[in-house]
Amino acid sequence: MKQIPFLHQGSKIGIAAPARCVTPEEMQFAIRWLEEQGFVPVYDDRLFKGHYIFAGDDDFRAAVFQEYIDNEQVEAIWLARGGYGSIRIIDKLDFTQFLQHPKWIVGFSDGTILHSKLNRLGVPSLHASMPFYFANKTPEAKQSLFDALTGKPLHYKMPAHPQNRIGQMEGEIIGGNLSVLYGLTGSNTFPDLEGKILFIEEVDEYIYHIDRMMHALKRAGKLEHLKGLIIGGLTQIHDNTDPFGMSVEEVIAEAVSAYDYPVCFGFPAGHFDDNRTVFFGQKSQLSVTETGSVWDSQ
Image (cartoon, rainbow, N blue to C red; front, top):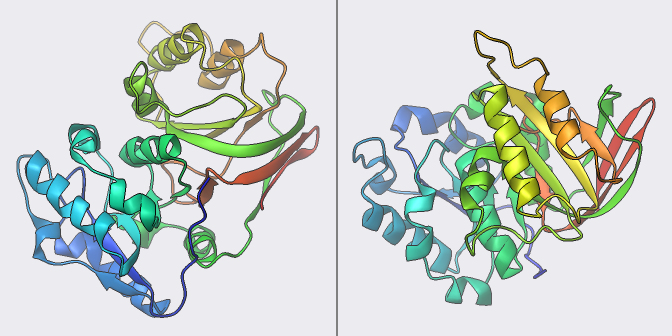
């Protein structure tokens, strides 16, 4: 993986919307927070462009994002929000100049597409809260983003979970939103998972959908050669009128039951207020024990 410089007082952070549209009011808190941390937010009125549900049409969003990834003065790009849309522009982006001067790309959810692309290019990134709803994030979530951007180590503790599988895992984490990963299967943007720790989280899905996605990844050989599996938030998960019969945690555990790597449920990252930052593409370690789990970045 390439090395990316960490940020400092006065570092410029671009705010870009490669997916759904946003309003000035929705960005106000995060912009103020950046300034309070000593960073310089970089954006203009194009951030608030609208085209159906998107922040401008595909060519517009791609052109603005291209400008930010090519701008050597911008040291990080913070994705304004998720939703849907990055998959429509990912093949329009040229990362040639970016690879000469890589920078942190920060976000999650729909941003999984960008994390996956960067993984294929050998560039680390930050799975983290985004400006949209940033005011609602816990102090720990906000602090974790500042710490990650400025190069401080991250340390998280999780309680024991009945579906955990005991063991130690060490390596690079990659992954993100399960639905987005599922949608990338078979494409050249799907991340390289061999020998990696896979992180997944999900929101607003049915249990049988998650069962389908896990088994699709399994049939595609994507779950076989992992060093470990980390499951973050499983938020607003639904069941049918006729119950599936298994919990969502049981569905995931069953899908990887043939493998012997450690499994950790309850990681503090996903679609909830305590959405803490995770380094993707950099080595970290996680210990899963009978009394709980501990994760440390390196």
